[in-house]
Length: 412
Image (cartoon, rainbow, N blue to C red; front, side, top):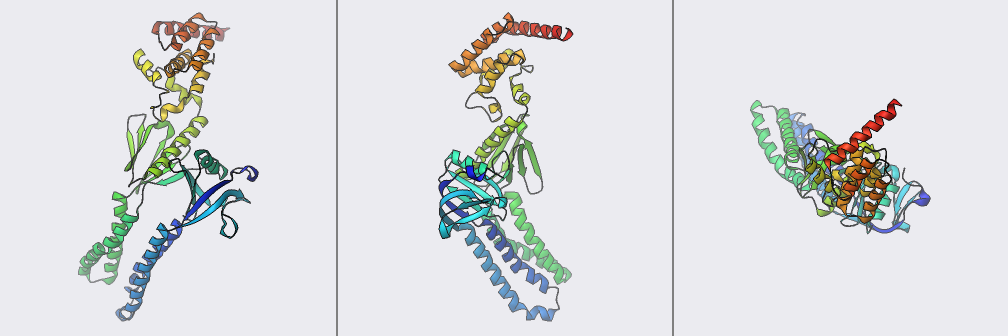
């Protein structure tokens, strides 16, 4: 997993350990201390129930205290300084007695943030390690060395914090649950009363998350999954036309014209940059792995008018183009123009797109490719395209001659 240790990166960084996993486990323990003992005692004879009231009180106090400790641990971080490196199958940072290490097998996911020069690594126990003071190249090298880069590992993004909603449900949930339990006492069954209380509180807790909480986003090399409370939606990279990440949502514009939105909650600029960077990286991986045909199809006319086709080609390499439009870069287009075996329509389209870019070196390579053609009509069509022109008649004549020559060669 990752790079050989001899070639692993070594950077001087500041590291912060966020004990999110420990905080979550303590929170569940606190909830259990609050709600499980009362449920057990409701099943016992009334005399035992009364005798155990002190124990129930202590259980509630310890439960509340455990929840408070969990909240403190979630916001407190443990910092280390020193070199980060990979040694003996583990990621290590810090020096001497302050050295900390995590086996590579315990790393679950990772992401880089171009906004603040941080790399966050998720551990299987729920904790997070954050490395600071890394530039973009160093962050990419660290993810690659740990086997967490976009080509080898999907990463999950929580689209915002749920702490406020969780605290709100802890405070308001018992109130609503108590009223529901009191209503159930018309049947004079304590077990039913407690069951209704617990169920009502659970409905409040998970209901608030489902209605107002952030969703999750899983970004992989083949696409993106929007994970919702009751269902998930997979969006392949081939269907994505553009992506917009805002404070309140991540919106995917699809090639079909539809839009898929993942709800977010107060996304910070740092987290937004992480999501944008990871999606861009996975799209790049997908395009490299995907058959060239999928990308080159954007050059095809596809029934469009000449003006529509020309406008689309002129915008193909513009800096403001969408994620999907960036499947073709300058080098890929030059390669198409210089390939005699490529369909003429695509060679001409690639030449028009390069002409719109205004790159003198690329334009010269198009002219050289045109001069190398023995077919005069093909040469004329490419020369016109190198100037950003599309002559429909010249293109039709050249294409017809190319098809005729191919058919003749097939019969020979």
